[in-house]
Amino acid sequence: MDKNTQNTSAKYHKYVLILLLGLGLVRLIGLFISPLNLHGDEAQYWAWSRDFDWGYFSKPPMIAWVIGASTALFGNAEWAVRISSPLLHPLIAYIVFRTARFIYDARTGFWAAALYFLMPAVWLSSGIVSTDVPLLLCWVIGLNAFMHVRETPTLKWTALLGLAIGFGMLSKYAMLFFLPAVVMAAIFDTKSRRALVSLNGVVVVLLSLAVLAPNIIWNAQNDFATVGHTAANANLKGIPFHPLELLNFWASQIIVFGPLTLVLLVMVFVAATRKKLERKTLLLTLFALSPLAVISLEALLSRANANWAVTAYMSGSILVARYGTQHWPRFFKTGVWVNVFMGSVLTIATLIPAFANAVGQANTYKRLRGWPETEAIIAQIADAGYKGQAYQAIAADNRLVFYDLNYYGLEADTNIPLRMWLHTSHINNHAEATAALPASTATDGPVLLVNYYKDYDDEFRADFSKLEHLKTISIDLGGGKTRTLNLWAAYGYTPTDMADR
Image 1: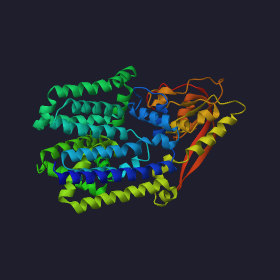
Image 2: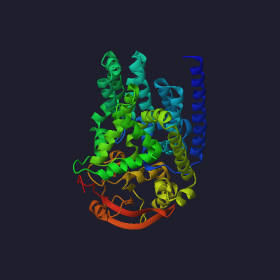
Image 3: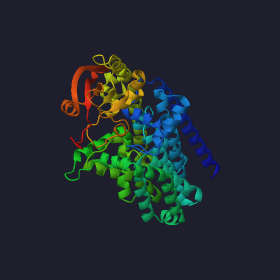
Image 4: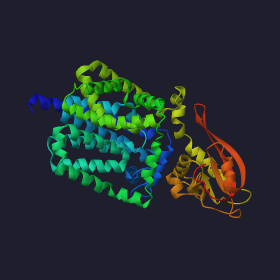
């Protein structure tokens, strides 16, 4: 590397650090002052972190370990539950920089890191805790290691690739989307084939399996709960196809990656089909196309959430930075600034509820508001008892309500067990698996039912020998949104034997 190249690399390295540390600090401050309560999923992950295991009903264990580490250091405040996200995203962006610098140059690395760090989904993700963030870290480490193994298949890079895949699978099973790209690279690229169809490939497989083995054993001991839930979550319906779901998925990627930058990524894919890209760029497209293709097919056959293919944007950020700065520099930089604008609006809406309400985003944040107030009202009613009798349990019919009431201290405040009423005999979530409402008789005392879903009266009456509606509570969530819960006093619970109703 000549002196000018070294100076250029050092300059862009400095720019990356300034961006990541500066904006990262701003996001940390925003996290501390955020008025948003935990979403039910976040509260569920926090509950898992109180009881470390090698797996949970709907996810592998990494998210619980991460939250367990952060709350052990900082306590159980909302910001402490979420702090791993704004800390890990700068690290992910920095590895994106290092990867792009290794493949191309430092200038491409800077713009790739900037594009990733400024994409709308990362602005939003930095204020919540989710399974996606540790997954993205493992994915980008794996991508970096793969590109190094292709060039210099040493034990260090081979081991890092295997560990990244293994720990990625412990983060989220979407790490599986990494494997088709590796296989395709080994088939069509001579360097990749020489590196992986060898002892190095055996090391990658064995290390990945060694890391994942405890989770496989846990699943085997628990009726493959996580694997089964993941398959059920896909909800594949087959023919007839659902083109509107596919269209909705791709429309949602505008919010994930940004409108103009998404256009550039599609242009890269088109250039790849026309064989107008160099070999290492074509390899990068495999790691972007694999998750997008799989989730697009899933959307066509059933449905897909916006974030399910987010791993595509690790290599996608590098591809767009390279292609955009070379061929469409003004369009590319405009796209980055559009992402900054979108992310800033999301951040302001997060920090200032009145702004979110004013721009019609109250519905977006309604599940993140009003939980302490909800818990306080239910606790007051539970403490009063029913006709002179103390409640034997408080039971929720919704998983997210259960976990938010759990996090905000309903059981601790009332000294009454918090449980899940079973809608069917088939266990559908971790709360039902670990905190199911036990059977009782009419003489055991009342259960306070916290009813979220509408039109469950018939199901309740089928499961309880005596049922009386107490009241309906409404929590103002701002922007014309309310949380409405029906409260019931119920006796004589017999869990349903119906697998579906």
